[in-house]
Image 1 (cartoon, rainbow, N blue to C red):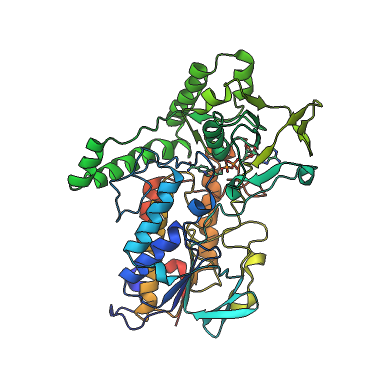
Image 2 (tube, helix red, strand yellow):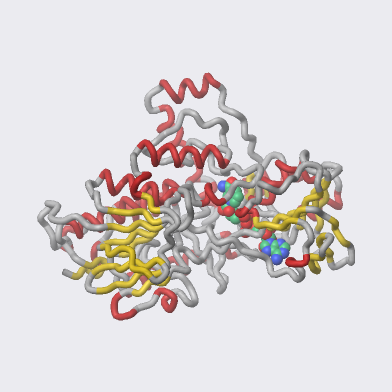
Length: 495
Ligand code: NAP
């Protein structure tokens, strides 16, 4: 930390804050563990739903799997020798978070079914409201609300007229039978691709409605053998070494490709193109599956079974645009009615809400809804000018599409904990980013974004309503470096 700007100087902890954490997903559980570890005992994790797990609680669709390797998608301090596959199924990841919360004894800190609808800065504290009731007054808020938790429902005429069952992929209705029934899926993102590959052999007919073709990177997903697991269980450091090597590989290849390394990108695109060439031989189908934009402009899809699935006799790729939904199914603009019993909306999420719709009122009546009316500026993804002692994990411009999100969250939290330590040592009562520091930071982001793949001409959930990607346009090493120590010159410190 910038020593000359460290007014506390004395390194002793003088006081302990009351902290509210918002969200009990991957980042919220992490925060609870790290607060405890730091000796901060007075905190509550508020969770709007009735269970922990965030995205892994909400998504239970058939075929759900993480496309980040298992040994990379875990807390650094909690390796897991028991992952069943190279890429873990969703239920296993959910069980992992449940197990970690239990092991670190943070479950009793979680308050479920409590949505924080508003937080107001008053008399030097944050007042948290749930509906009409003020339920807590705290010194510090850490928002761990996640990114992809607001499903987007498509604006398609007649959706309510459908006579069968219809639901969003993140609200899967497990009471609806699928075996031997006709299923329609709208969308061809990571979710739809996984559902298609899993369901095609179970249903009588599968209609996949594609608006835009996707690049698909092939990756096998073998089970770990008992011998491999024995190495993970018994060889000290084996899993940490694996994590370190995969993180480095990911950062140097994919992480560089998306921010402008043309050579790395050419390799990725070549691999995707060969995947299509090797697996789809029908020229007409291949043409319809061939994207007209750069690989990884949208989130790159990882699958070694989608092309095989969509070519099965009971599967159909439909590329005529959807005209409307009717009682019997989906009618496309060529006039054809695609009849079905169940319609799945794999139409993605709003990735730009963050902790909203929660209202946030900072100092001098500053309202988050005004600050974020057009875009979502934040300082280094974690702090907002005028909103002291309010910190975010996986906030705007976090590297959400580049690396393992758990690693990102851990690094951001370590940075935030240094600011909280400053508060604990009496170095400042109020800590928030300086307006000009945030503007300068956002200026560098904007300039760097021009060299990234996300702005090369595709539509994706990475882009906000003005077409700006809410992404990290720099390297992994720069992210690690930037998050290592806060520069206090960038912060308003009020005592
Ligand atoms: P998505 O990538 O946003 O895909 C949504 C799909 O729905 C797109 O194909 C989109 O078409 C289509 N769509 C949306 N509105 C439509 C409409 N009105 N008519 C027709 N088609 C419409 O959503 P997702 O597949 O749920 O994935 C979201 C993100 O979740 C991923 O990018 C990834 O970060 C994460 N995820 C990760 C995993 C994993 O394995 N880790 C698995 C699933 C999801 P267009 O392309 O034309 O817009």
